[in-house]
Image (cartoon, rainbow, N blue to C red; front, side):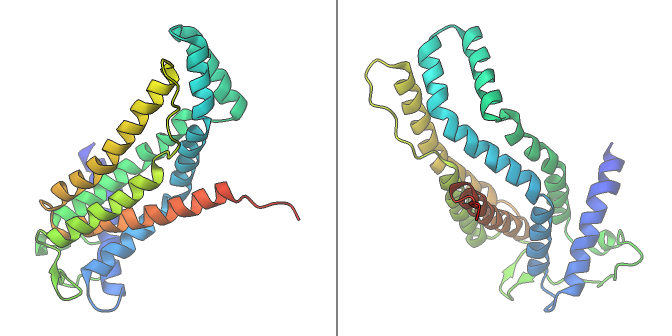
Length: 245
């Protein structure tokens, strides 16, 4: 299994990164990492778009789900059946938001391994015959940030863009202020969890990022920026669908 992962995922991504380093002007591995990350995100774009639309649809269904909870109370079997009927009626698959993440996870792990492994001469010996071996790779990004070492600055940037991305995904609908209603308590709890997640994810991103090589943190920054742009694009399409002429 390890050999399969190395051959099918690690080596192609590693070779593509070095190819981009050779191809792009400036001999800056930072730009190669950015270009590779954007390319991978574009390949995964259809899957992530499906995931985002599913998440948005589930958010829009939340009032109806709350109504079913209030109607069926503690009868979990009846509630589950009613929710499945609601999903079928609205043509929403709650699992479709998870599948794209599962699909892209092996690719992201491979990219992580590539960046973590570095570019020592023995590592460059794994290049395909048609990919030029540069001998050495300049790890300075913009001539100032050494991507082979930890970078607090990039970690903070990653945390900031993680905050922006998480904030876009959070449902902003305020909880119902109806005393004694289970749905109101559920929504209050959901709002509290959303607020905690909004702060928890960026803080964890910074704490993890400061312990990683700068190349990995730059990848994280790029992923978050592209994800923000994708979310903005997908959500704007949902809010403003094309109307027939």
